[in-house]
Image 1 (cartoon, protein in one colour):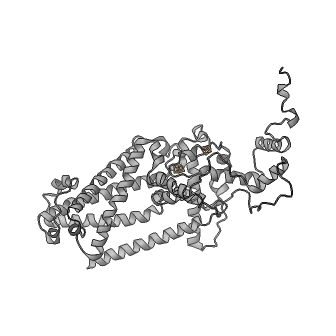
Image 2 (cartoon, helix red, strand yellow; image 1 turned 180 degrees about the vertical axis):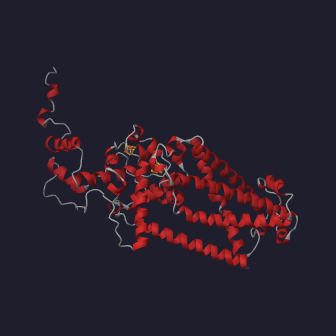
Image 3 (cartoon, rainbow, N blue to C red; image 1 turned 45 degrees about the vertical axis):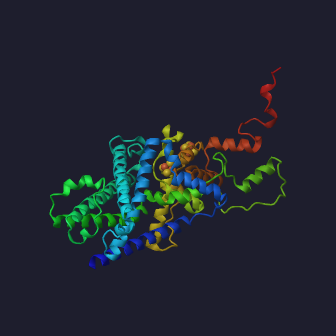
Length: 441
Ligand code: SF4
Ligand code: SF4
């Protein structure tokens, strides 16, 4: 009975803290300005099923894609087994599904065990890639945004997944030995050997009943408490993408990548200048601010992007600015945006929701040098496995610097002036545009 009370208390505490954190993240995302992303529901559903559920973009790098899919599928499906642990924990039963499921039960546990082994292998490979093979895009020495917490976060998660899977397999091995010895209530559900944990039985065969019960209970508690802690930890980690990849791909930008999001007011001005529209045409709504200075000026989808970023670095490894040694890393743009949101949250929790720390995304987190290095090539958008657009944030910050603060480099100002006076980026007047053809016959 005491064990049941402790279990229910732990479950309630975990549910409370997870719900609190989720609501806080939701409130933070809602800081962003509104943007309608509910058009084309069928296309959006298809995109989500292919990219988030089917992990389509991960398979552009097939080996890593397959390993990632194994971890993902394994972790999600094995957690079906958690349902049994939850019921056993609340009602004090032992393997509650064994009797009603009969032979299907053994089949399911065997399937879960194969997936658990797959997760252990895949996570071990990921640790080797990160720490021994030292894949370039994940190295803190080369990418400053990967120093300290981000590097540790990835390692912690991989390690936790391995330990949780080991707890699951060794728990089954000791449980089956206790069933065979008919110790206490273990004898009530004789499942027979499972395929993977059966291989571990020789390790535990010589143990006394007392030690086996202690280990089995410890593994059981560790497994379930580990999963509860993992679920809470994920809300503070880049691994939040496990959940957010779904809404993030559903609400992804479906317009062609090269299409710029022009501002209607500015477009109207340009059209009037070019004689394509009358000056008395209905005015477009003038925005409060041109571009974005802080996260509140970005859209809610930009902010959800920041929370969905997996920090995989595929964007950065294909960014021409980064490859050629410029200051820009699109991954850092997303991580900075998330850091800014997290700092705002900390301010709220400490000083109330009206608190303003006086900082801004542009300037305190992201520097001009990074923004100016972007070629707007869209490679980062193309590469992202969860359809994030670092470019959209870069463009909005850059737009603010240029349009609100007139802080463009001198060479850009000359180009802007030429566009205004010559209707082309060059310094020649429109009348001289065909001079190059004068000597042609
Ligand atoms: S759009 Fe900008 S940030 Fe993205 S890959 Fe190209 S240069 Fe890099
Ligand atoms: S923006 Fe996309 S590609 Fe870049 S690190 Fe984040 S998840 Fe990876």
